[in-house]
Length: 207
Image (cartoon, rainbow, N blue to C red; front, side, top):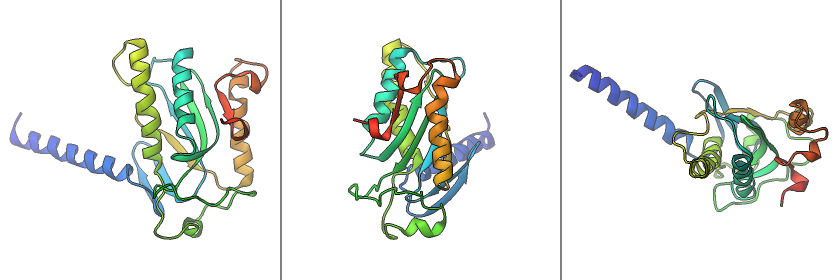
C-alpha cells in the first residue's frame, strides 16, 4: 500500500470518527445530517424510530426479550417512551429524548403534540441539551447486541448500524404512528389482537 492510499484511509478514518463523535453529542437545538438516510433532530421533539437486524438474522424469542427489556430499561432515563414493538427483523419506537443535563424535566407532551419547528426547540431554554437519537439508539443496540451475542454464542452485529427516524409533526401524525406500531404484529399475522403480542408496550403499560 503506497503513501497516498494510507493517507486516504487515514482521512476516511478521521472523518468517520468525527462524524461518530458529532452524532453522539447531546442535541441543543436544530440539527440535520445525512449518512445513507437523512436525519433531523430538534430539541424536545417526539420521534418515530425504526431499526433493523442485519441481513439474514432474525430475533429468537429470547433475543426479543433482551431487546424489549433494553428499550424499557432506558425509559425515564434517556427518553420518555410512548410505544415500542419488537418484531423478528425490526423494531419500532415512539419516544421523546430527555434532557441530558442532570435529567432535568421536560415539558409534558400534552395534546395536541406541539408542531415541530425551530421555535419549539427553545421550550426548555437555550442552555438545555437533550440526548441525541444516536446516543439513544447506541445504548439500546449495543447493550442488546452484546446480550444476544452471548446468548446465541455468535459473532457479528445483530443490528444494522443506521436507524430510520422521523420527527412526529403533530397530533394527527402521533396517532397515526401509534396506530402503526400497535397494529404491526396483527398485520404480520402473529396475533389477532395487539394486546396478545408479548413484545408490544404502550406508555400506560410501561412499568
